[in-house]
Image (tube, rainbow, N blue to C red; front, side, top):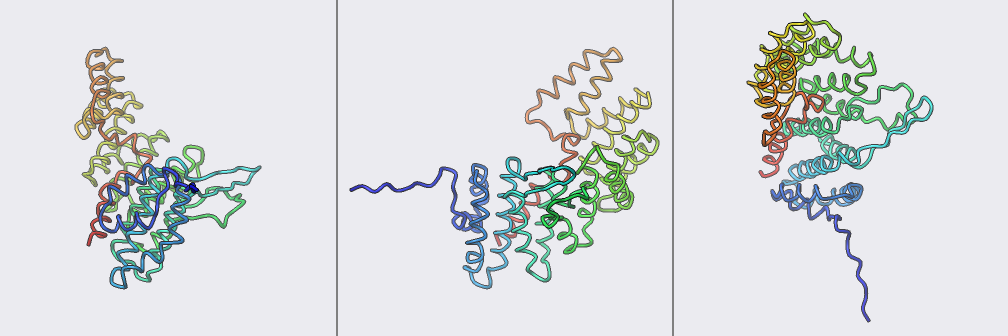
Length: 345
């Protein structure tokens, strides 16, 4: 007599085995497995069930490293699933319900694990910064600072993850900047309340040594949207003075070109777009803006050449304007490598 043995689904995983591989340094292999996984609810269930025992299996001396490995594994799992299954929002009359799915719950599981330590270790700051990189990529700012709606049918389910990070690392200025970005974008562009809150935060930070350049460029963009052109231009100048990061410098120059176009100053706008392309060659936003400007002035051959070059670029350069809403997502590669290095120890 033959017995039929049920086979696991093709995308099912054994989390304990993945944690063993992850703690041993097989980060790329585990990441590839997560990229092909569909059932993140099962990963969360297994972590809750098996994670505590796995973290103690290496003895007291290895406990902290295993906790970091488990929390970072959960964060990588959240990132693998975030673009497909993040949350369900239900609106009923004037009330809003948010039901968080597995990826954000995986982040919360990892966060709760690290918060159990009374005094945070320096690497925990990196982990919280990596959370920003994951959540910003998902464009979910309610996860960071809560719902903007007064009417919530399930207010107990608010997460406000940034509160945890700020409580643990109150002097980290990127967490403060993240509050402003979240306030600006969570209902953009339909609310003035969020814009006012964001503007106040950016105003406070625009002279900060750590994040002042980005705060200034984001505040300048808000002034541009409000047609306060002189104020916007002054802020773009300040952003370049305070930052050498290509992301910030490109945006300052690109936004300067946009502002100058609205001021009917095409010569200065052309110079601004060309200077932006010196920072990120063939970036599509400045290439297309400059091409449109040149075509309108009769320089059609150069305009066509700019578009062709931008479209043909391989690999496509990271366009800061296209990544503007994703904010700290750009820091993911370096942050996850720092976490991996700590786990390897």
